[in-house]
Length: 115
Length: 116
Image (cartoon, rainbow over all chains, first blue to last red; front, side):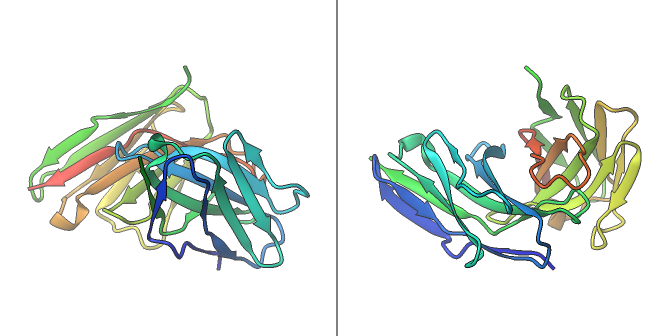
């Protein structure tokens, strides 16, 4: 069974610093995708970045990058130059190729950016 | 802009009184999902529709039902809400490209349900 683990319930970072949010996963499917979503206090889940299991390079989207270490089964999100608006819950999620459209989420990390 | 819309954003109901939450999408996606998210927890998938095919999660209580009358709309019906059903309910959509692992789910803003 697939499993996602986020070990940091909360993180506090100074504005403009870089921050890394940890995510480890477990799956027996060789084909899978890893996603990060941001959920502000308003509640909407906002897609940030995707990494496929066969992708050779780490994914990047603006200030977001994904540090994908396949052998360690980790997919950490790196946010560069953090902003006050980055304060939110962040969820790591995985979809297996055989997972029948399902997305499985980790427990989330609450990130707070201090001015 | 193409989007996922949920109405209402906030819903208050009484214990045991049936309630319906609605979701609509302009993305023309094949798949629509309903998630339940309780405070400080991860979203939990209740069920999803692939076109007209309904897929229920094994641990979704019978109290929760869903309808998808057409591609654009999907409804979540809670037949007899209990206090434990108070949560955020999130609707999401995706294209439905089979085994493609990169298929992104796009979420609506959610409906916060309060049960009195």
